[in-house]
Length: 237
Image (cartoon, rainbow, N blue to C red; front, top):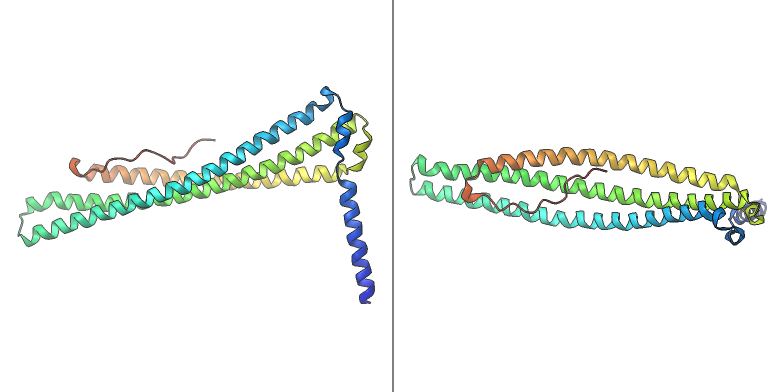
């Protein structure tokens, strides 16, 4: 019985390998096509090249997003230090029996520092969300590359089939079309994930900006931090 199972398994493996071999497109037939007949294939290859460039950009954007997280962490550390400094100043004034008028500006600084910390925390959440967006966009770009690769194979097959190139018989049209459909479906799902993550990022961005504006309105001019360059805001696609 075990021997029969082994033989059956080996036969199945050979059959699968034969099927894969039979479904493989023989590119040598493209040499039989003229420039006009090759146009759909050339167009598909151009799109594949663009998709490869998009993957490179998406990976760079993801790296930039992760770098911005370190900057945001530094901003949070600065905000915490400002709060501690203001609290220490208030405690010192209280020990010196300062009047309410003398304490008022320091209390304002403490409130502003607390709001600045809230804004810094929201900025951290936003940057972390944007990392998720960048990661999802990178995966979507990689999925689009796979789609263009499948479409290129499809274009090759159709060009050879329509022009009666014998090598077209080496491939299975159903398999080629199936790979295209599967790649497009996967890409569509990943694009939905990108949109979902970006929507959440926009909400966090708006909350961060509101908190940041509030902290600046409470701070005295002399205690306002120098605003950093604006980076990482949501962009439209």
